[in-house]
Image (cartoon, rainbow, N blue to C red; front, side):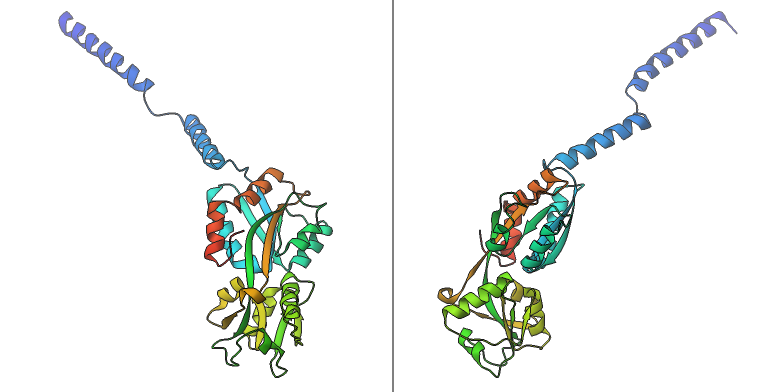
Length: 273
């Protein structure tokens, strides 16, 4: 092999090596670097809303059952890493759970009276929604019920919530104001139980919240109660002092008053706070 050929091959090899060095420097990252960058992106996504990630348990009034399932899904989507679990019951039952130390992070009741009775157990409550009463009847209103006074008819099977339940207390309030005496065939532990009795045909009518009747339009009719005879229900929300996720609970309660949650509530028929 000639000396000239040998020198040309050596020069070519040097040039190739020189070109490969910067390419290697700019090349693909290592598996370790890739994982670090992915983790950083995940952390940024999780913290974008500013709410700490946590598994939250929220005690909520039975009348919030449907709307809060929608709200909870929306909150989880906006806050990656957070899960919201709801426990629905009558407000008086929820208050008893709080007093007994049930593990939970936040509370939403269907009246201020129940919430006020738990001042030592909660943070400062905030009204997130309002509601009103209607008379639920069987589909098509077969008994021709037109208003509160018709509920006094002894031929009708009327069901009400128990007086210690917020909707039961509101019902008593509006009936007493009109001096109407109703003898219910049963008194139920929450508004959903009242609605169920009417849905199943076990009662001819019952007083429920407007939003509850709206969840069963294929099975019940709603007879409006005039404003002058009606009662407005306030829904306060508050954190619980026993929560192990205080910041995350406060973020959720605050979110309930924000535009996204308010739209969900009002689309379901709840009134503005």
